[in-house]
Image (cartoon, rainbow, N blue to C red; front, side, top):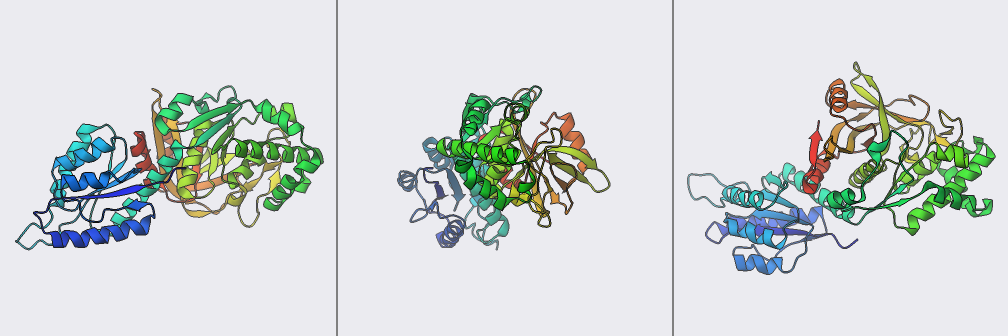
Length: 447
């Protein structure tokens, strides 16, 4: 990936109290550099159009921190927009340092209105905004989350998602359009027939796959209890998928699973997908490409594997929703008291699949990249807690106590026609997701 860059653009005019402005300029640089090594800053405050343009000549940013160090008229924002019409912006207003009946020292807030008016008239889409000084925690948090979202936006523009096989009949909600992925997310989409990887897996010898089998045994509990032919065929699939991902520089995959791996190969792919998630490759099943995209985004923001599952049960008294899937969760997400237990598929009774409850966490975020009835992209985001619960059903499961009313969440998301697959990230990334939605020009439903 080309180097990520954040440009700090402190604009103003020299007729205000420059001693106050300089103190905040230095503090702002310290804050930004503490948050990212990728921040580029000017040597001095940009108090003229010539000074602004000279600095803009030196940068190629993925995010612009546009700060009114003092008041600045609309020409300053216009110059920034003319140079970088599509680059995300966070507009930062400084708090007036002194209110004593005397001189207005900065007038940063009026400058923010001027800049915001220009941005909204110039281009479609949202920008981020924060008011306050560089020492304030809310300012630090907002800028940090905006930096994280901008970095993921850049990663998306250089990511490649693979659809391995087609969605099963009746699962068309996960079927992706190449052009839509590229236009709205910058993601390249590739496709391969599932039989190609099955045929490749069949060519591998037991000796070639031994290292993959041993790796899986280290990660899981009870793999030796799987029938030998299924255990060996699993290792073949693991090698085939891992090599395909590495050779083609794939960031995420959406793999068909049933019925092909039961009928054409005799061994499920579930456990392979679970291990790939641990290896940093966001991997969804049932060929849900937009589910894989959701997993990739949430993984990058949380910096951990994420869970992919169906909402299968509502407990009004506990204010919780249970998420479940057949058995492809990342091994590292298993409860500590059980580990990543291996079992067999709940319907086909063929293994190996993952069979465990997921570990608890104080903060989790539920997320989905979806399409509405007019095929407009949208984000669903809500927060909760992963409860300390054992496995709820055959397969892998977790119970999320939601921050808001769980019954209302279920009612709302069903009535709004959201897809039946959701991602649960092991971190509070709600604000970062919302900011990313703004950057991508996508409607955000944050509950």
